[in-house]
Image (cartoon, rainbow, N blue to C red; front, side):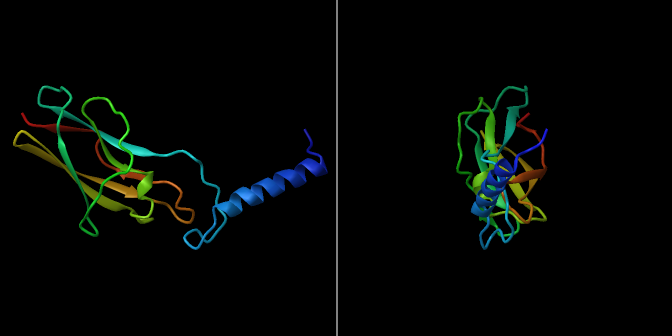
Length: 139
């Protein structure tokens, strides 16, 4: 399949516009970012394996000590809680930062560390590098 010169020119213009739209001082090279919005939930269950409801979840960005609050709180299944999302691209480094999550419910608690990064040079999306899928709280 060949592409005519006119079509190739149009594709080049579109790619330049789209790529250029994503470059900025924070993104010094032209980047093409997808429009997806990534979220990173954790499932929290009680000792019987049932979804833990009413959990108080604290997320601490270990390098700075800042308490993090993800912006996207979508509708999750019971027992599923948000740890991080793409609204935090300016929080995490390229190398990866630890987020310490503490879940508390009815006097019981559990703590786990997660690692999130935003890869250079484009810094388009948060990536989870480490951390559990499920936490068990209580006996």
